[in-house]
Length: 321
Image (tube, rainbow, N blue to C red; front, side):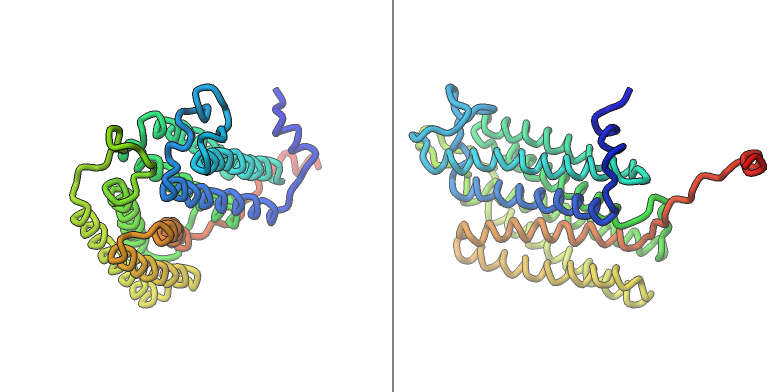
């Protein structure tokens, strides 16, 4: 049975460059949705729409009574459709490219289902009155989407042959440890936010937004400790890559991560000692996304994927040609 995507693939054959641009567009939109989600929280608009999937019990869109908070929350919801469009473009571009990039198509569909599941999780966040654990899971799922988007973008610049490592296995393992530490750093950041100064909505004292019942200062210290560990690991990776003369791309990506980590750490200390102003927290969330992307790209630079070889032609077919 022919599908709409297969029919489109018969008529549209995008270039490899267009496929890469489509994958990059999906990645950019995944970053945008993280930042705008943070803006919803930092402006106190987390309950701007009081229910889900509608904005109110009677209206799909915000009403004038809800003010700017409803507009901000509803705008973030609408950006999900823009994200879906970007992911859909990436899926169709990968499907229509000749030869068909099946792996890229699967990564595109993985992004689509992550978007859908996170939209439902966002609805649960609203319905639970911004439960901090659900909010943290919502952000972690968004970072999972960024992960798959990065993988699709990087794969769009490679062939479809088997991955071939270009450094020794211990270095590959070290890069994976660095990615794990970075992931833990991001998770710790969500816990700090869940116990911190920005609950995400303005409510009365009788119905306060729930918070994580842990000491904020201790969570912030644990987050800072993980940051020091991650910076140390990034330095170890830089020196190890230099010692073995790893590919230039890998060494450049390791340096990029180190610089972004330093900037993010400095920003974290400034916001902590200035009572976490909203604008700095928003920039810090963007920085966390960039740190995550920079870490994910390092292991991907330690391999190469040649173009998949063409299928062998049977000898009998050659004789009959």
